[in-house]
Length: 144
Length: 433
Ligand SMILES: [Zn+2]
Image (cartoon, each protein chain N blue to C red):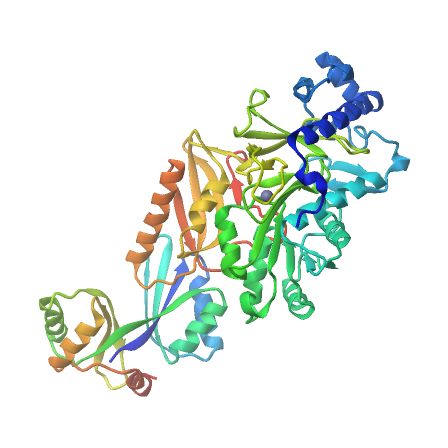
């Protein structure tokens, strides 16, 4: 139901982002999607990768503050209004989207990664509305 | 275990010894040390004026500057031929301060350190690893001979090469660690990086920490890393006075017992020089009453503490000095508020999301002081809200303790500098502008 996102704290400093990518490269970890949000001082790098557990371990070893977060990977058909429709389910249930970013795949469908305030409830809700959620295995199969 | 009978004498007995030795020392320095004689003459006080311990306050102070002015041997009370050891403190600016020892001085030093080691739980069964830098610094050799005298097995590993240090600890079965609190923390981290849990895989049960002040929060961090059952005690001294061994904490952890048959402590108001009544906080002034080579009289330590004269639960009757709150040198004046780095440390170490390492940076912008604190984020986060909340929490706690607003800079683990000797966590950049 959920997939593991790798979240890394980085200081807004020259070269820090590159160092993270270097660590992942050394471990032969493939980056499927990412989002980088930053303020003037900090950045939070969120990554969907081929091996989040190994990625976290390698980053921690190199002195990064890295954690795994459960997020939803939602499949969207290319269709006007589909994302709005899905979000309306979430909003009506009183849930909040904490963040969201895109995930594209080889098959041409659009997908999004999102973190919703109450993850379990959101997952059950979306499933009941027949929204398709990718599993960790799907991610490896479809996106890598 | 109480090492010497002198530690349990009655107040009257202690004072009798102190007065006798004080008189002898004052007579001797007046006779043998030119700069002392000049100072005393200027102050209008003669050795014969010292009739009671209270008369000590008539004598002039000695400062580090006096030692520099008389570099290298000008304040020594014995001819150079009688010295058997010379140490020096690293002067960051100008000449170092030089200290010397006769054979009898070294015996006394060893005795003092054996006492404080016993206070801290050491016995002849211990394997004691000395992770203080050997060399001109008095810390390492002081602890070395005091512990060896006790019968402990010494591992003189000095500082540096931390992975090898951990290997010795494991392979030699080190039970006692001598280090600065910050290096003890660093060694614990290195053990973990090597895949060892210091609590289970190492057998270090005693920590004798010194040369840097030990806050209660730092003691807590030591326990977290090395185990709750580790006895961590701080001890105190400085090269000018002898080296480590002036005082040390016993297992009741309620202040450091001063070796009063060798040193007389006073607390003064650092601004006026006036002696403060027992129990009040101020600058510690120490008079050496048993040393031959360099018997400093009323030496201004610049360390801030208070004296506790009530007998301790451990059975010792010697006066205790509270663990230091800081040094008059270290005090920062930020926007008119007096701040000791130790106050900041107490706050930071109480916050679990950040690690025990920190750096304090003070700058000035538009005629206003800016206090900035760098800390390491050890609990990872995934959303900004949590970072903001953490910053807010740290700021709030600092404001309660300091009455000041600070800027907090969160950084990745292992980005701040680690120290092997005395930690230098404060950067006051205001003077350089
Ligand atoms: Zn005691």
